[in-house]
Length: 112
Picture 1 (cartoon, one colour):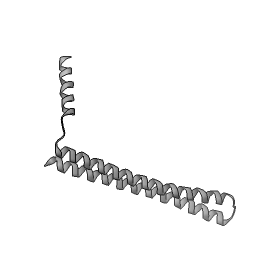
Picture 2: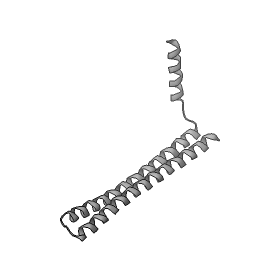
Picture 3: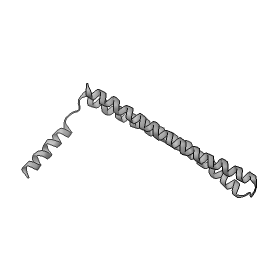
Picture 4: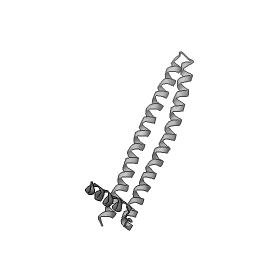
């Protein structure tokens, strides 16, 4: 029990100790990277929402027809949905790259 209390006290002191300038800079780099990644994802979300809305409108319009024009509209709607998926994949990859770059820079600073 005493040993547990000592371990907890040590951990509390370590958590409360002031950060070094390098640790602060590393944290700032990580935070900036996370914010940029979130921005990329939010922008992609806006783009894909518009694309999906257009696709839905095309599908609704196609539903009112029974012609080749309706089939063409359905094809366009499907293409927009697939393109929206690609936009999302691209944004996710870019966000991961941004976070990885931030982590690499933070690690480089801490390694000095």
